[in-house]
Image (cartoon, rainbow, N blue to C red; front, side, top):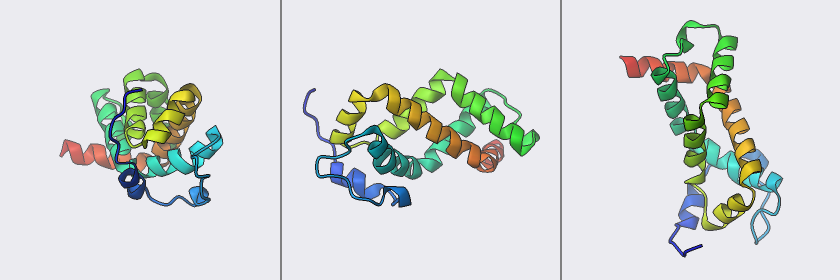
Length: 144
């Protein structure tokens, strides 16, 4: 891989502390997919949460989904379906997260891409479903 500059320390400094991720990593970085999930994916998803919700709201609007007119349980189902079936949205979500990785994290991600993408999308889907009302508010404010 060609050398390129990544502001690794700055990227790490941006991330919020996530309780499950508070245990320090070995000096060599994450050694397992589970380590990576807790020490990298969760904090990056928390950091990118407002962007994630805005992107999902845009996709909901683009697909004319009746999110604000259905019951909360149906909102969760609609959002899960959108994140499961829409390849463009899935890759956008992955890009939002991967773009905040350090050089070492990116190298680890590239070695374990299929498993980490699966876990990343599960976490992102749960996060969006849990905040369906916020996605609805973003839709309403964008329409105004």
